[in-house]
Structure formats: structure tokens, C-alpha cells
Length: 235
Image (spheres, rainbow, N blue to C red):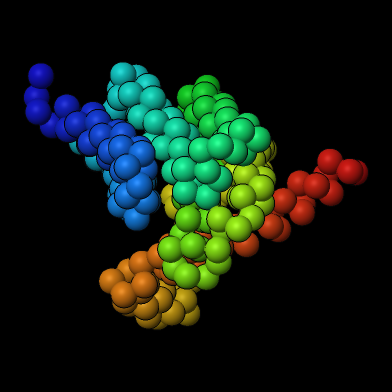
């Protein structure tokens, strides 16, 4: 088998190893490293599919491997990190909400597999919050704490409810942003370039603040869709 056909699967397994290693650091109290490994895993998850399409190396095996890896990295690892960091080992009620989050991620990935053709090329949005974005939202309390903005350990049940909300958003029918459909107007090119420079500066100076702001911006962008969906249900 040509090496290039194996490359996307190797990238997927590398991302899975980062997710598993994140859990290891969570268990030994290395929360900053655990959170950063999840970010790297999310970045790698965006690469394997792109590499497979560019090399024309897509396969059913690769798609299933990617989903199983995603569940470890974006379903199990974030839930464990938030539980250990903000909820505490003795918080049995909080663990229930971790299970809700993990179940939501699992069902989101299962639905994605079933609807793979519909969520593929040509779609202007995803259905529900994608698993990597859901993982980043789930870890928002950790980012806020590490950035020094909020002591989330003082309100563990709010953190637990946030986890459950993210799990629900992943399995919802909410239309969410897809990078494939992104178009930048000419007048916005300059602002995007300047924003990129600011983002890179924050990454190397206040990484946790940058990640927290990115999460908040993404969640705010979901609010109009949540409102429209609620009115459709009530109507």
C-alpha cells in the first residue's frame, strides 16, 4: 500500500494519542498541558480529512477510525478534564452531567456517520455543534480559570450544567458554522488580516485568554440560530 494512502490514518491516530495523553495529564494534575493537548488534537482533527481529500485517500475505514478517535478526544477527554479540574472527584451529581455530555458527543458522531453525505461538500452549515467545537466549548470553564477571569471551582454545578448544555447543542438540529462555506467580503479582508496578527500575539502571550475569547465568540454566534429554532418549535 502506498504510504500516502496511509498518511491520513496516521494523522488520525496521532490525534487520538494526544487525546489519550491529555487524559493522562488530567489524572496527574497537569491541567494546563491536558487542555493544550486537546487544542492540538482539535487542530489535527481538521487536518486528517483535508489531507485525505487532497491525496484522494478517503475510505470507509478512515472515516470510522476518525469517529472513534473523535469520541476519545472530544467526548471522553474533555469531560474527564472538566470533572477533575472543576467538579472534584467526590461530586457524584456532577459526574452525571459529564455522562450527559459524553453521550451527546457520541450521538453527534453517530449521526454524522449516518448523514456523512449530507454534511459533506456543498453544505453551508453543520447540523448541531461539531464534536471538536463542542469539546472546546466544554473546556471553556478551564480556560476562564486559567486565564484568571473566573474561579469556576467555586460554582461546580454551573460548570456541570454548562457541560450538559454543550452536549445538548451537539445533538440538536441547530445549524452551525461550517468553514467550507466561509466567504470574506473585500472590505473585511484587511480586518481579518489585522485580527490574525492580534490572535497570534494573544496565542504567544495570553493563550488561555485567546481560547476563552474564541469560545465566547463562537457561542455568541450560535445564539441567533438557537432563537430561530426555539420560535420554530413554539410556532
